[in-house]
Length: 266
Picture 1 (cartoon, rainbow, N blue to C red):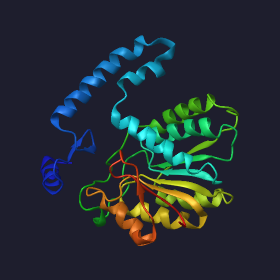
Picture 2 (picture 1 turned 90 degrees about the vertical axis):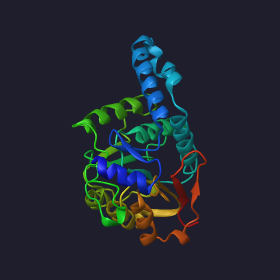
Picture 3 (picture 1 turned 45 degrees about the vertical axis):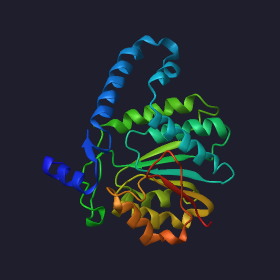
Picture 4 (picture 1 turned 30 degrees about the vertical axis):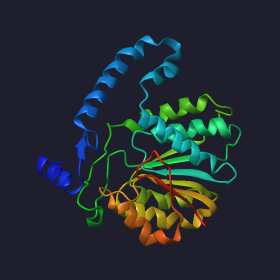
């Protein structure tokens, strides 16, 4: 994104900038403090020893902890709902990793709770005029061949829970609005207990939402990461066109600004 475009975005949405390819409202002080924390974390990590994962929590930020608490609340809502979890928009896979660990905590002996992650791993495949002019094709791309690394990370996470010899996650690479058809055909049994929409932009959100509706049951949880969000209007517009905002009782977690969820059929 050019400086001219960034300036335009800042004018339209006060305080909004693009940092390392992602939108942020961090002040210059916050950005500096974040960099300092990163530098400290990088220095400390090799010194933690075998308990590195536990000790690294010393540099966990409030915002990250809020995200963990949010998905903990959401996961608890589907424990009595049969079906799989689908996340549309994976990026680095932080939410997928958390979901695998939450399954290990709450449902360690439920192999039917398979978790599917859909992503291009190359950023936004398409941007529509209904996305408001803030996004570009390729935004939120990650490093080349990262999907293979994420596969290994998620396998390791699964290994710390019972029945780890049964693989209970799958990554589906490509534009979800195209890969969803094959997924539905290949998984005719699948009820979607939770669908997480984190693709940010209009077209894939609308297409995927339309296609998975027949696989939802009353009680399924629909999760939206950028709803009521001025710099990602496409997600709200997609939901409104497919289901209708007034037809859902939308809820939010107090520490996740633009994240919303609803119980389907409620």
